[in-house]
Length: 191
Image (cartoon, rainbow, N blue to C red; front, side, top):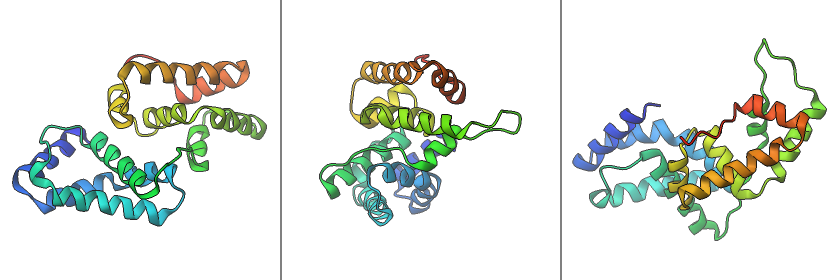
């Protein structure tokens, strides 16, 4: 998904109340929102309802929406708030499918031993919730650190610190650390 195209359709929607632009945005981002929502609530119907509510609210309040906004981050924040509103408190978890994506192998890579795979999954699950969420947003949703700060409503430096702590913790086991670092291509350059 092109950020520029997403921004173009968002601005067209906000300026002209163009329902086709909103429909395009929905179709482009619904998969990302759905996967993100499932990390908070395991119930698919609740996630679908929350996404629908987000877009109904966007349509309802379209005259007051900002034209210049990071659209993906804005929608992730909106979904997160909607889920909290629906459920009260929500807890972020990585799903098995995330672990499978994290550990998938290319044809030219050696196959990962199932025992190592389980150990990696266990180490990722042992991370604090906020660190798991930051890693998910960074490496699966490909958000920058500043976008993650916006989504989670925390300071940029806190995102950097939490990401660093998560990576340090994952790397603390030498064998797992090398494998995780290789698989995630982790670098802590400030994006």
